View 1 (tube, helix red, strand yellow):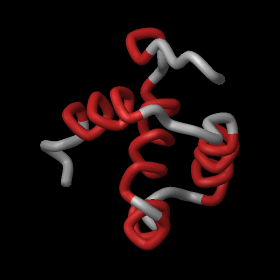
View 2 (tube, one colour):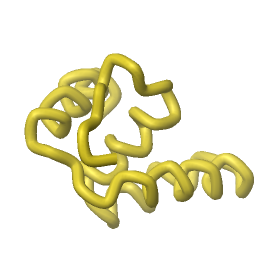
View 3 (cartoon, one colour):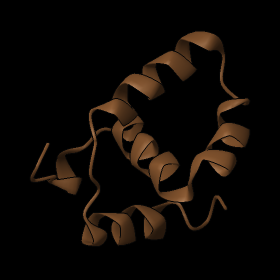
View 4 (tube, one colour):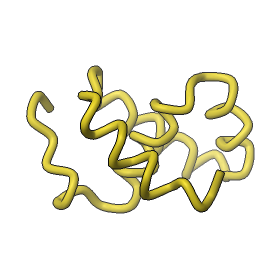
Length: 68
């Protein structure tokens, strides 16, 4: 996914991007809140985003800022 159209992403894809942006330790703490199937699906989504451009990082952090 070289060009990410943030507006077209579903909630799970956006959450995957958020977990990538917050880093492994924080993401691990969040992932503990999900059951095994949900966590596996999120990991699959995260793997689909090898690089997250800075403008997308800013968008995802703005969207999830009320959660953290």
